Amino acid sequence: MDDDVIAGLLLTIIPFMLIVWYCIVIRAIWKSISKSGSFILIFSQSLADILILLQFFMLGLELFAGHPFIPMEYEEWYSIFLIGCWMPMTAHYAVIAANRFSAMTLPKMYDVLWSSKKCIVASLICWFLGNAYNFGIRLVGIPKSAYAVHMESSYGFRPRNVTSLVTSVLPTTYLAIYITTAIIVVACYGAAVILIRSKMKSHRSQAERVESRLTVICLLNTVPFLALVIVSASQKIDTKWKQLAYSFGMIFNCSIQAILIPLYGSVVRQHLFTRSK
Image (cartoon, rainbow, N blue to C red; front, side, top):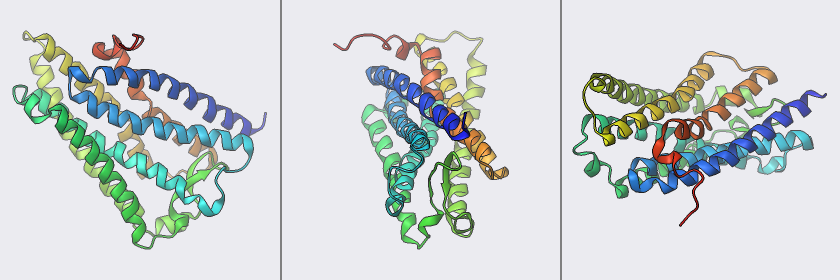
């Protein structure tokens, strides 16, 4: 079987199955919002995850077709859509980490600090900042060939001209954003885990146990993201098979939440297959 057909099958079937499952999970997350404002943030990040998975599904279809669906003169929209989802998703990691830190360190003030309205505002800020970067960075004269687009020949998102990317400010800005996010995430979850461990032997209320489980879920959800940052910064992805592996790393990163939430989140799990009232 042709390599492109195999890659196309993998990049079509797997993202499609994950999207279908994620749609079921995100419905349950939506129905859980009344239990905690945190689910507003998780719901918002899940939207970004699904939209990114849709791009991989489209990439798989393009491999079967043998050509991109968008003409080359308009392919910049691939990167606009990708960055417009990836950067808000990245911002959500930092905000959710701060949310979980507050839940564990300031439980009595948590409902005030993270009311439903404030969580909605925080989610909107993530989307705004991510897309402010998305469109703002395009005003500094970076060649269009430096932005990642659907590269069906390399099984992933790659710039048409790698030299244009390397010589632009894009790698520096990406690295600055990722390092800042990583520092916030590690600091917040590090403190939260220490508190969870210190409370394990003491009596905890049901609400505290729920918040602890949710914190662990959110922590595990960040691990693939941090791994991708390390790989992209330290490894040269110069073959189509390395790119395919990296693409599946991105797919896993965008789907792990849909796996973890039902496994460890009892609040969401009870809404998975219930009928809407």
